[in-house]
Image (cartoon, rainbow, N blue to C red):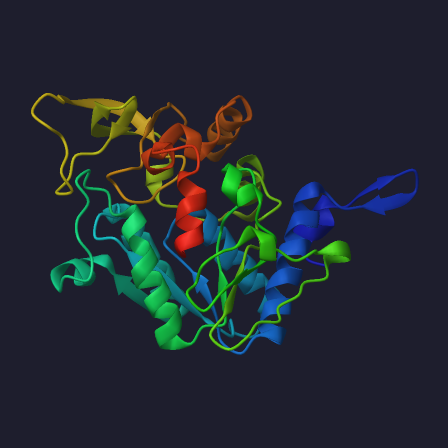
Length: 312
């Protein structure tokens, strides 16, 4: 047993029990190993955001001292936060991993995709993602989605079957009793896998603190130029913001989640340490996506509609 795990074990009435973080870690490691043993060409989605960082950390634990037996994939919208991309590249380089990058910009340049009027490219990730899956013949794709994030994600199983068009049909969800996962799929189909399904945002942050995992500084309070749109603090950028009637101001903010700059809002915060972030989240009654993702506010079923089309 590792020193970290040993420290988390405590005696209760003469019996040894694991902390809730160790239970979640054990479940996620089990899922990752199951996929590696059952599928031929898995890949892990890695953006440099906190959930994908935790997922990569778990994959490293699952196979150490051997290397991770699969590569990484990122769909770059061209509007990602520079700090997050820099962290992504440092991590990949430091660990000597393989990273496939699909660029939304390439699809816009050759006409396969068109810019949206609102400037957001988050929904445009679907086609590059599904094309990359087909091109590299990935049969299992790890994603960092959690059930606490959003209604459509709460419907997902840990193993989520996608058809030959990468589309999701809730009616084809399979039972997962006793942590038995069914990865059977026809040629052309693949399975999306969510090792963090049963984690909450608070669990993720507590695990990051316990494991000493490094994150981009964008997740902690810092002074940044932002402007207000639809009740959210967005960062100025080449994506199309701000408009003439949207004044830019410097505020002390941090990000609870990171994605396309055009739809990811910052939150006012003074939390500069992991402990302060954890305390802040523990007192919040709004999910991270509900608080800071404009693309989920398009309609009540916005995420589910995108998932049916192949989005993660």
